[in-house]
Every structure is written in structure tokens, then in C-alpha cells.
Image (cartoon, each protein chain N blue to C red):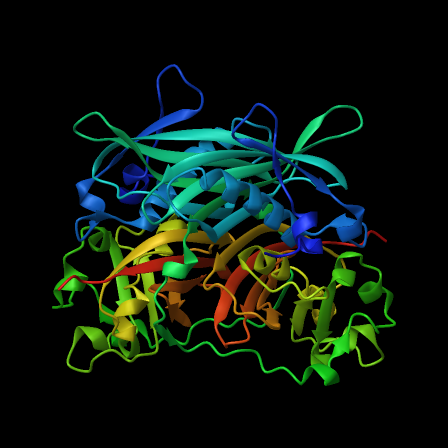
Length: 283
Length: 283
């Protein structure tokens, strides 16, 4: 029916031989973000493995409410995903997934621990009583494309080369002579460059592809995600996604980053919150 | 140094004999909310057990970033809390805790699964670059006290009898002839009636004691929490807490409830998000 796309290949998981709860995957260097494995990418791989595990049960399952606690820094290369079923109900199923890597000395380290509650998103009713509104974005042709950006921060990410990302210029002053706005926001349009349409797994990736809000705050330091909480609130319609990130509480070296993803039919498809540690630049 | 308070007694955990990873506790009928064990109370008990477990390691630990996936409905009575250490680092430690109850037929059921990242909150630096502002609350004497409320929903909760809760009257129209505002908010002042000062565990309880935002929305149905994500961002100063809850996305039968708790020194001490299923009243 469909050709396997870049994203589907990169996040593919296969059962580990002789087990029904372990999966293998490979973190490709072709999806790194400035040398690092992206948090949303990790989450998509873990959620895919957990989804396959829970699909062994009776219910149709999509990722719905996910928590990810990041434990150590991932590297490109092979990974094992260990899954555990916590509860399988008629509507909601919950499980855990750990991504584990073995280093060159043979030492195993857990990279991320996720707990996920899954459900069939197609059975959500269509009633919307909502005051949330989609981000006010300029037309795509007036946005800053990561493809044409001269700024190294935008252009040196293999991950972003799979995406067509158009950033709201009101949130990219940090990349040019305007300077950061100080608002602590990032907004933009996104789709996959190869035309793959969004689905819940793609939303997990998309929840972590905008520039960190620290750039727009003008905050020095390396942002490191400690915790992600993600709610997939609707299966996204085909077409462009609109992404929005903002923070209101940068204190004690940590900040929250609230993410919204809106689909082409004006549905709020994902709400996420990241807890981010801003590692001071030593010097 | 201190007398054990109501809240400390109610959330007390003791090691299960012969183990170093299991704890026992009792859900008292004296802390029920309309016949149910409150989600914030559950979280406080689980977080306390996990904190004791992680305190066996080298680091001083306070609950910092917690995820709770609710699995089945708790009942008053004895519980077992099973803990697991995921990672102990110099600054951050992560573990899991499950609350398990055994029913009258001897069947065990897991009530909630939490994953918690802990750290020493005293070592957070004092720098605050924040645009968040404390909720604008009327003076306490102009607020609606749960003690004097004639409304049954407010007055028939044993849990709330341990609290001095003063609700912003702009968010309590649902309890009188004014009717719900439709904004989807709840706000108020809170302290323990016995004078116990707030700490991180108390914040976990406080993150779930306001009336659900469904009341102020005028949404029919029983709110049932599926997932909680909680960040304790500062050790609260002594004195009254200011609590705020709001929603912006009630869709497909689910809504997010964003919680903020501010302390008496105007620090944003807790940020939480609940994912709530609104169970339709059958009729």
C-alpha cells in the first residue's frame, strides 16, 4: 500500500530473536541533530516498540499519554528496547519501554525509560469544546526555511534535512542581527520532505524539532531534556503541521517547554511538556 | 523536632518485612474525597516510598519530575508500594513505584505506576528568568471557604476537612445560582488546617485538591485522571499556597488540566499537567 519512508525506516524496530518483549533498532547517523540523538526521535522509536508489544494484546493501540525520563546520552548505533506490559484494558493499555545501549567496553546503559498509555485514537469522539487556538503563523513563503538558513545551528543537522521546517521569523532573531526576542518562543510549519503524511509517531518526533526556546530567550547554555510528557490528542490530518513551543518558568537552571502541534484541519493534535536543564557553558 | 502531622501520618510508609524495595501504607477513609482516594494523595504516598528507596543511595533526594499513569481505582485499606531503582546519578536519581492492592477475593491489582526523577531541591540556584505570574486571587476573606460552603460537593470530602481551602469566587459559580463561567478554571488559597507547612510531598497533594475544571466549564460527567506529569520547581516557603488550574483543550472526551502552585514568596513551586477523561453520565 505505501512505500516505506525515511522516517519509517529510521525508526524501524524488529523483535529480538527468541523473545517476545525485546526489540532491536539502529540509531542512524543520518538522523542526528548536531551530533546528538534527538529526544523526539528516541521517543518515537521507544513508542513504536511499545506499540508493537501492546498490539500483541486484543486492543488496537496508538500512543496516547507518554512519559519519558531521560537517563544518559544516546549514541548512534544499535539499541535494544525492553518492553513490559503493565495493564491491558478494553480501552487503555499501559506499558513501559527502556532503550538500552552497550558501549565499546561492553557496559550497558539505559538511555530513556518511557511509560506509555495507549488507546485507539480513531474511537475518540469528535466533540471539541476548546478555547485553545492555533499559533498565528505567517504564510510559509515568509518564514525562515531550515534549508536556506545560513546559520550553522539550523543547517548542520541531518535530522532537519529530512524535514521541511519553516520558522516564524518573529522567533528566529537569535539567528541574525535582530537578536533574541526574549519571549521564549519558537513556532513554525513542518512536514516531511519526502511527503510522508503525519501520524502519531511522527508527532512524537515533531514535538522536539523546533529550536529550543532558550535561543529566543537569549539564555546561554546547552539545553538537555530531563523529562517529557506527551499527549497525542488526535490523529493528525494529512498536510502541514503547525508547531509551537514556549516557556514561562526558567528558574533554578531548569525550564519547562510547552509544545503544541496543530494539524491542517485546525485540531490540536499533540500537547507536550519538556523539563529542560540548561547546562552552563563552562568558561 | 516536629510533631507528626495529619498529612504525615496519612502518607506514612513502612518497609515491608524482609525486603528493601517494598513498602506498606494504609489509605485511610479519613482522607477520601467523595468516597474516592484522591490522585494527588496517591502520588504523595508513592513518591514518599520511592523517595525512601532512593535515599538508600548517596544523593539527597526530593521529588522533582514525576509521571503517574493511573491504572485502576484505589480503595481505602492497606497497600503495597513496589519500588525499583532505574538510575542513581550524582545529581539526578530515577526510579519507579507501583501501588498494588489486594481485593477481597485475593486478586492483586496495580493502582498507579509512577516514574520519578529526584534531586536535591536545595541545590537549585536562585536565578529566576520568568514571565509566569502568580494567579490574581482576591483576599482570603473574600474567597469561598470549603468549610462554610453549603454546597455538598465542597463539604462532603474528608480530605478537604484537613485543608483550609479558599476558592476564588469567580471560579465557583457552578456551586450557586450564578452558574459555571465557562472559562475552565479553578483558583484558590490553601494551607493545612493543622498548620503543617508545605513541602514537596504536600505540593503533590495540593496539585489535585481544587475542584476539577469541568465544573467551571459546565461539562457533565465524572472526571477521571489518566495521567499526571508533575514538576516540583522549588521547595515551597512556609505559609499559604496559591493554586491555579485551567484547561484549554477539552476534545474527544478528554481534557488537559494545567496546575500551578505558587508559594508565599512568589515562587512558582509546582507545575503539573493532568490528562482527564470525562466519563459521560449514563442517562
